Image (cartoon, rainbow, N blue to C red; front, top):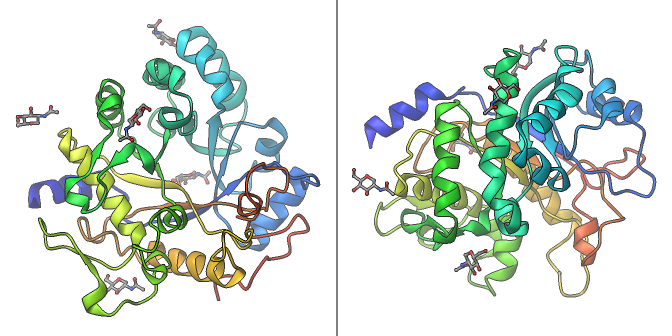
Length: 339
Ligand SMILES: *[C@@H]1O[C@H](CO)[C@@H](O)[C@H](O)[C@H]1NC(C)=O
Ligand SMILES: *[C@@H]1O[C@H](CO)[C@@H](O)[C@H](O)[C@H]1NC(C)=O
Ligand SMILES: *[C@@H]1O[C@H](CO)[C@@H](O)[C@H](O)[C@H]1NC(C)=O
Ligand SMILES: *[C@@H]1O[C@H](CO)[C@@H](O)[C@H](O)[C@H]1NC(C)=O
Ligand SMILES: *[C@@H]1O[C@H](CO)[C@@H](O)[C@H](O)[C@H]1NC(C)=O
């Protein structure tokens, strides 16, 4: 246990950051200059894009803002099947922007195992091809390659000590984790206590999902480790650490690529409110920036990107799906945020 802790400590920068995801499914999407003006005004220093939009990357140049770019799922098959296509993608979308734009990581696909299982067999190849193009340009120590996972691939996630990755994906997860370990990269995980709460049918208390104080007798205790959990976020992150250690990977850090709370929902989503969104996001920011870590790895940074900058009115699905944003298209805050 202590050896494992040390491994993580040395492989990690100890200061966690908060970033923000920038989805673009808005009918009145602000232009890149307006987006960057909002980021600067709000002192947002880390962002994740869902693609490698050229105009956006140009607007982010010389701002000091750290950028995670993405290979969209619809480009994944081509890249995973051809080293040359991958090299071409890196040349066009990365090499032409660094160092002016500070690209720090590449998210290869999004929730591929849970949403695009036909691409799963080539996911690790895609990551390796992208990585070797970075190596060829001497950018591999500066730009890390990973792929965001839905936490739904972690089964039996409570108690966290019993969690494991859905075995269907062992043939992908094992080489994937080997790749993350050997390249000094990190596991990207999307953590949505809102959905865990909604799907629990009352088992998970709202306070536990929102990081609100619980009476000590209401804290969730892992009977195997006796670790106390005061919020869903930590429990999910720890379930990912345990799922990795189940496969014998004990020194791969975690970055949460998406987390947030919707500020509006339909009649079946009564807890999607501005108050709850404000509470969740404010408490999340405080928790992450305090470097609290998790019960399994106290003090180990879990940097987190909030989902998301803008409400995306063009997204389909329930009302909540369009209301995860911190801001409306005019850059007006949707609720009193981080006070
Ligand atoms: C780019 O980001 C990295 C990682 O945060 C940082 O170490 C580096 O100083 C940044 N470079 C510039 C030019 O801002
Ligand atoms: C893939 O391309 C990179 C350059 O992008 C090169 O260094 C590497 O050797 C190639 N790998 C294979 C297996 O062809
Ligand atoms: C594991 O993943 C497979 C493939 O996506 C899926 O069919 C199965 O339902 C998952 N198992 C559980 C328990 O979620
Ligand atoms: C993990 O390591 C243990 C002890 O060396 C070994 O028994 C087990 O098979 C390994 N598990 C995997 C998934 O490699
Ligand atoms: C901040 O971290 C300290 C330990 O470093 C912990 O005692 C305290 O409870 C944390 N505060 C919050 C709000 O998480």
